[in-house]
Length: 90
Image 1 (cartoon, rainbow, N blue to C red):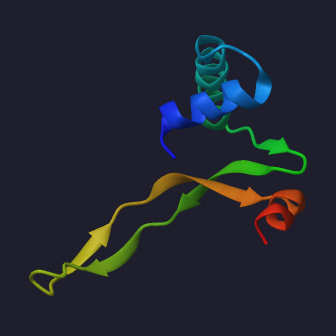
Image 2 (image 1 turned 180 degrees about the horizontal axis):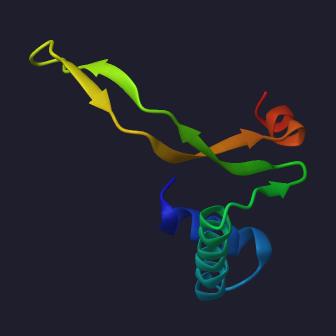
């Protein structure tokens, strides 16, 4: 499902227009991104939680040359599904 399909599904489920659903989705993405960038964790009870995790610098191998390389440290977003979401898909 891509973004436009998600907006259409949200509009149909909520009874909002597609324009309002797109605004709501864009606002959710913007607020979530800002919160995670600020170091906050977002928990949506029953759905799941978003958090920032830090990966340490590590050694890897270039698959083309088989030479060792250093993979830089970086921050990444992790999502952990809530119990209700897991129950819905199982």
